[in-house]
Image: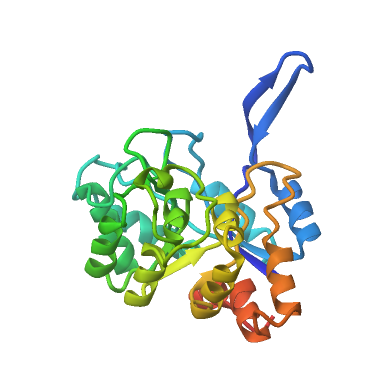
Length: 301
């Protein structure tokens, strides 16, 4: 059994590519039926649905759409809300807490996926973190290694801005995700390596394990190519990592298209359990219990 901490769906998926020779569109993200079909194939029976609201790359999505889908899912889907830091007044004192309190009353359990092309230290982003901490939402973010590009919060090599936020907002759980985040599972041979997916072995622990050891309010999300490649690049180290931080690592998929087969993390985690490299209790924690514990859901199944 798996619980997906990082899922997306759109009631009305939209085209991102057109193939004239076939007169077909490639649609971004699955709809509800398609996501359930994929989850069933992977042995996933619950998920957090993350709305996308920042328009740098995706068409903004109504949080209400997600709440409605989750309300009608029989408990299978859990809604997060999402708020762009520039919303309402485009200022560092925007009353974002009003929105978060309202979405919390509607059943939302957290905030994300936060991915506007802004820096952690931006005053508007700091305002979002401040309100999120006060409301009691965990916050799932995507991290970018470049100031240019389409999406993802920016941080410098070594993740100093994230560290400052972890220290400044100790009661806010930050859930790390994205290529530039997972690139720092190990020490970087070159700073430019954080712009992609390093495929060399882990020479020494990087900023991610360092911050996990220092800040209990940092959790991580294994989803997407960024998470899976990080786990596959040096399997001996990833086994050690999964065992050491099994209380704050969460399984996720980040499936972005219908019929996407996922990234193989279900098979990988099961194989580690079956070979005794990941004890049963730690496997269960990563597969579903950590996410449910964080969101105050029933962890018994």
